[in-house]
Figure: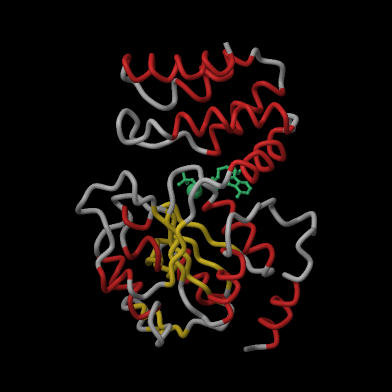
Length: 275
Ligand SMILES: Nc1ncnc2c1ncn2[C@@H]1O[C@H](COP(=O)(O)OP(=O)(O)OP(=O)(O)O)[C@@H](O)[C@H]1O
Ligand SMILES: [Mg+2]
């Protein structure tokens, strides 16, 4: 491990620093992330929308003192979007690094969010980088970049709503260590919602209880259970002075579905809790 990596590792020992985004662990994910980083292993995060994947990566980057390069993947994202391309500058062409190349050159975490959305040619770039070679070959410039010790690749996706064809090939998946994140247990979720919204724990408890009932509707009526993110929205609206039922309608009901029957079902659960 290089000197710079060691000094960066030392930073993580102070978890209460103000500049570290708040993250409440739900299991062993913090230790696992740190081990993966030290062993130079790439990491795959799975979990439903709004369960804290992005917050977790931001928290870990700050904790380890590493720059974070985030890419939101979409179905048009190509390998060149990650690695870079020649751009016209004046009358000349100049090479411009993409976010993945920048992270490999400078060190830090490259976070590919919703990686399954990216085009197939992206895996060609990721494969040599995510096995023991840790290499990024740049065909266009003829370079072969070796990833430094303080480079880490983190990818995430939501297994819930992916089309059956939009999944990672075994040869890609089996290059990562993986963590499944899910919604936290009730006590932890109350802590998170109270911390993020400023609403009292007591009032957050009622919202978290409601979330448990709404999550039980997942599968039968709802594609995804209500996220921690939506609970925080709802709590923030209540904290700002909005009546509870109005806040719950705006943050917990309307975002979940467009189907009138499903909405009626959710409304019944909401009014049974708060009405
Ligand atoms: N364990 C947690 N600790 C602290 N905050 C959390 C936690 N889980 C969720 N949150 C809060 O919930 C919000 C949503 O989390 P985040 O954006 O990280 O979800 P995500 O899993 O990345 O969702 P998506 O798949 O939609 O991108 C965050 O802004 C944060 O306020
Ligand atoms: Mg996210």
